[in-house]
Image (cartoon, rainbow, N blue to C red):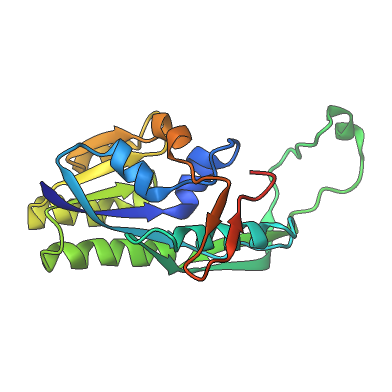
Length: 219
């Protein structure tokens, strides 16, 4: 059995595999057991996330807090927090202007060159995942790693672990067609979508202090 640590890019998991599904109440330990080979002995699961904003959906932070409480009931899971930074920036417009609905094209107002937009950036989560993956490899904390993402920012950390440290990295893909550059350096690829449904928490959990944790109604 190979000591295996699982590294989860929470933002990529959500937007690539969970966003438009009813599988958001996801038990990460169950997912790891089902999606990884039987030879993998999962010793830790690292979940890298950033707090969501309630600017467009006021209930979103409460849903995330409930999920993080649910994850704390899993002994193998450690959550590592990054940050979301939202800022108002100037951005250039595409010309000719594109409008929806189409009849807006008849507007004859002067064409602006730039406009203000909200720019949301995640800071820290990707760096934390990549650094932890490489550190753990060099410190011999695992015999194999599994990385759940389709973000090509992780190509170099995966390459270092497989090519320079000589340890296998399993790519847990949240999409049907993973990024070519990630597949190039990963040792193997496993697809998680068939296991999302069977890997759900029960609707009601109880934390270590006996307090209930309810699945969010919209999930």
